[in-house]
Image (tube, rainbow, N blue to C red; front, side, top):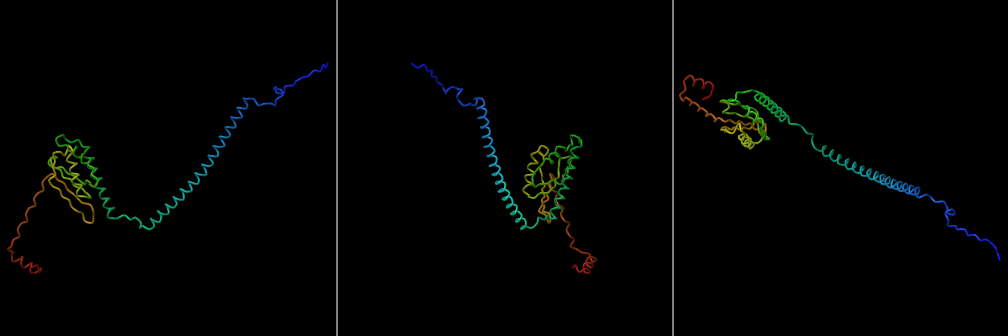
Length: 228
């Protein structure tokens, strides 16, 4: 009978297994790997975007250079802009007239007039008139404000009708009516001058008839001057 002792070794026990990384450290390494991977992807995307934006900027600069060259060609083909001296002088004169009218308006609106003869409302409403193409040059009141005379410039006679219509809708001019309108063309200018007056136009006095009977002295003078 044999008394040999047999032993069994379980190699599946932990002490016989190769060393393992702890779970906490494993999670840290996995997280670090993920962050590195994301950073690499983002960096790659930024590099691609940088190259694409640079290519796009070059294309835009090329198109801009082409457009600037086209503009330069067009400008070289056209004659240089030259201001008309007559129009410049006309504009300066109109500006001076406008400034004069504004000074008059400021002076009149600042005065403390008697309520029975106050023109403040009418002057203020004249200043508020804004019809494009119509410029006020001067105005005058007569008969304690019962009548008014207005003069100015316009580039279209049809705009005077709108100017008068808008003015008569205001409270200060609601009882007024312009009975005289005069529009004239200025020489060597495209501007028209106009005059508005609430007073009727005075009739021109008839010319005195010429005396048919000439004195002998007049006949002698005309004969010497070779008028007859």
